[in-house]
Amino acid sequence: MTTLPQSTDKKLGLVIDLDTCVGCHACVISCKGWNTENYGAPLADEDAYGANPVGSFLNRVHSYEVQPDDGAAQLIHFPKSCLHCEDAPCVTVCPTGASYKRVEDGIVLVNESDCIGCGLCAWACPYGAREMDPVEKVMKKCTLCVDRIYNENLPEVDRVPSCVRTCPAGARHFGDLGDPNSDVSQLVADRGGVDLMPEQGTKPVNKYLPPRPKDALPEFDVLAPFLEPVIKEPKGFLDWLDKALEKI
Image (cartoon, rainbow, N blue to C red; front, side, top):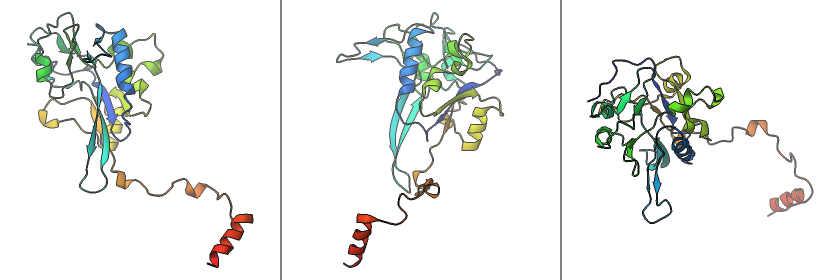
């Protein structure tokens, strides 16, 4: 079985804002494209337009309708991928050492040349974040675009996971969650970021920012004080109409 490092130099991960995600699936498409063309073996798609399509994805977006105790129901879009847990059970059950956690940044990866496709890691993951590729017969998972974030041939603005760079709503954030002064750590502190299923004891690095209650939003137009009325006093036909209505 594979052992986990006692500690890691960094805790690179994602912070996902559930209040901002609009469920557009841009992150899913971007992830599929980048990881099909770069790190590891391609992400397979079989019979994509047929009756029985199969394929593998490293990132998915689920949508749920939530009914709070008070207020209106909310539609929550919930992106989910590998959470790069500190105490990752997918690593410790791997019989070949194919699954491992990096000391330098805490990223959990799969060495596909050593993976025998036994599926133990998928059974051990409480988040369902691993998928067996139906063609390659090896386990696939989010890599945090490790081949991208350290690529000095890319502009610095692009040295983030593909899903983060692509998100049109700015719902995904990337950084070192082991550094309390990092932007992502400050965001988690300010918004009360939470772990997914903390009762599992896996200590996920990725955090989620909970959605704000919709009823808490202001019911007035915040721009109204800055907008001049189009017509201060009605004139012409509107002036005549006002006077006519007053006599009714």
